[in-house]
Image (cartoon, rainbow, N blue to C red; front, side):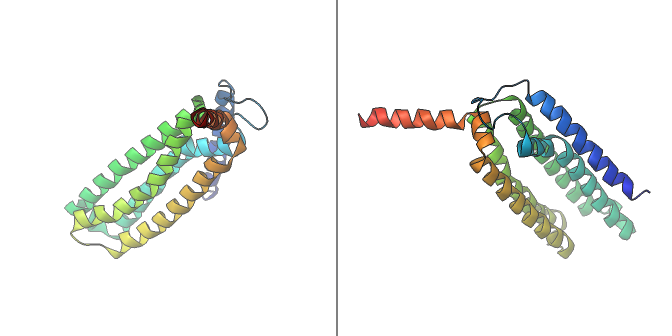
Length: 198
């Protein structure tokens, strides 16, 4: 039963956040309210990942990883370089989580193309945070440890894949285009280029 608790928690967190995000998203009309528009579908899932379950599980998985390392190596908790590494990692994670929550909140309540551009910037930079973990390991320990590099490579790979998927979604989604006014932006750019040609 204990093994099922995290799964039940995850399902409840996703369900509750989707309900709340859908409810709040309806208060802010789409920039182009025709066809597929407004906060819904994959956009709801994406915002929920930035605001709710991404931060929760990022924190829990990191905490679990540090706890397991300290349990497997009992003297590590008092080791000064390890403490420095953990401090740098937690500060970095807080910045990443804060930036993600801010991006998700803006996607939820704003309806301008700049909000989507800012979210894409977040996804372009997210893998850099995983790469920074390798450098933090070198700064803290004076060398690169195989365990940190191995975990970082997996994190970098998954972060790059996730970022590519969401950037592609932002670039190709009709819902995103209508909700945040990309169609209006494209029309403005077309009309301004026609004025220049005349």
